[in-house]
Image (cartoon, rainbow, N blue to C red):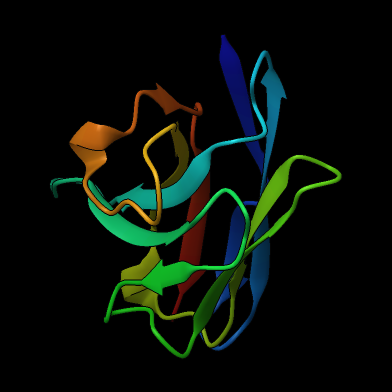
Length: 124
C-alpha cells in the first residue's frame, strides 16, 4: 500500500511563490504516475499537474501553465509542485495523488491513492 504525505502549504500574498512536496512511501511506490489536484470551497476538485513515473513527461492544466511546475526526485520518491506568481484564485486545498497507470494521467478517477491535502491561501 502506498502512502502520500503533502507539505509546504501556507498563507502567502499575491505574486509570491510556494513549493509543495509530496512524499510517497510503501510497497511499489516508485513506479507511479503522480499528480496534483486542488479543491476550492464550493467547487469541484480540479486537475493541476501530473508527472510520469520516470519524470520524463509532465502535463499542466492551462490555468496554471507557465506559473506552476511539477517535478519529481525519484531517489527521494518525492514529487514537487513549484508555484510562482500565485493569485487569490489559486486558493484551495491541494492534494497529491498516485496511480499505476502508464504515462501522464489527468483524470481524478484514475488515481487510487490520495494524500490528506495541504491548504494554500493567497491573499490579495
